[in-house]
Length: 460
Ligand SMILES: Nc1nc2c(ncn2[C@@H]2O[C@H](COP(=O)(O)OP(=O)(O)OP(=O)(O)O)[C@@H](O)[C@H]2O)c(=O)[nH]1
Ligand SMILES: [Mg+2]
Image 1 (cartoon, rainbow, N blue to C red):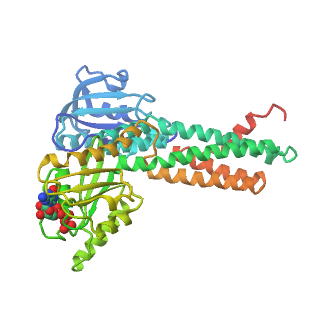
Image 2 (image 1 turned 45 degrees about the vertical axis):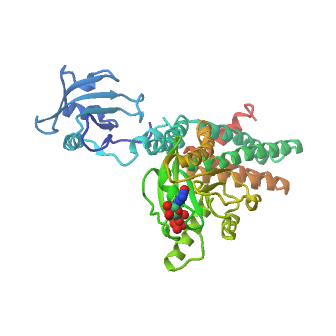
Image 3 (image 1 turned 90 degrees about the vertical axis):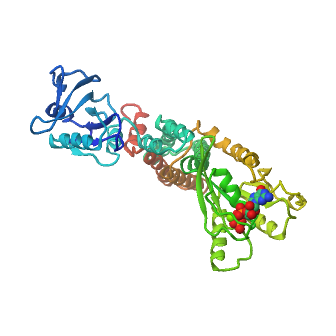
């Protein structure tokens, strides 16, 4: 173990009234501290009790013998614990006052209050998990839906880390090859060797780029699919919004230009968080507030992952409608033909040149009238649901490091093409290697040296 000299403590369950609350300790003094404040029913001090057992007894104040609560104490001695240090968990009653009193007692007996995330940080520093896995713990705790939980669990289990480690190992071998040529200038790297380096570099670049692409999915699972309802005024956008979220959140009137602000709500469709956003209808604004509203709508449409483009089925398509859809261009869009309870006047020939993920007919007059739209969104969401079992990049820090790594590999390829020296190649490869190391939190260039010299015979 490399890190901690002190023992940390914190309340590990949410504060509030509940059946059981947990105060957790980690560090070299954890057992000594619990001995001071805990009296087991069997009278055996915790430090003399075997690890991984539940012991019943009473918690006392650190000074004096005042009983705070009855409790069950669990010990997990190093290294078989979350942090790889001695860990003690105190299960007591979960009243705010009780938990705070227990925490005060363990602090008074010699521990200090843990910083946010410090237990997991110790797990990382003690080598139980890597940095990407530690970040998986945080994603798991913050996950809003079952699919997000699944994705976070993959990260926590080390799926992404294994992939990163395997590519990094490959880069290390390449680097060793190139560095050997640098160290022994008389044994210049052969032309066929450089071709092999080029091929491998390009393969690794492809793998990294594929990982970067998954970050779109990762972001959606973490933050939600930004789904923006767009269309001309009065087509029924706010009515659809209210139907989809199941409550009357957005104001609906028969006056065109009712919605001015963006209205957001998060709904859960098949385990994927969908951030639904109602916007002001597009038309020539009649006043300053509407003008500001339309500007917001345009910005929201630009940032959308999915657009629900709504038209009024009881009217002919207008040039304004065509204008709106032309500007949405590349974002995946569902065409929503609303008000189908009225006589239909809409003809779709003018829409032919636009591509839609799907086309649905809706009426907001009753609950069932938006079922088709819900299913169309669920269809899009299915993709996200499927990828949650794969290796995906769901963290912006990882995404940025993968992008930097890809840039360094691209530079390496350019350097090979330009016929630069091995030193230059080694430099850019090393950068790529280090970026991947940063993802795992294990930045150690000594490994490269070890790899090089382990490939030499003794005496050379
Ligand atoms: N018959 C019928 N009327 C609808 C339907 N959906 C909405 N309406 C009516 O159309 C009018 C406009 O609805 P809104 O939901 O406010 O329309 P909007 O697109 O949000 O309008 P702006 O906020 O002005 O852009 C209201 O009178 C609604 O009751 C529908 O499916 N059928
Ligand atoms: Mg509206």
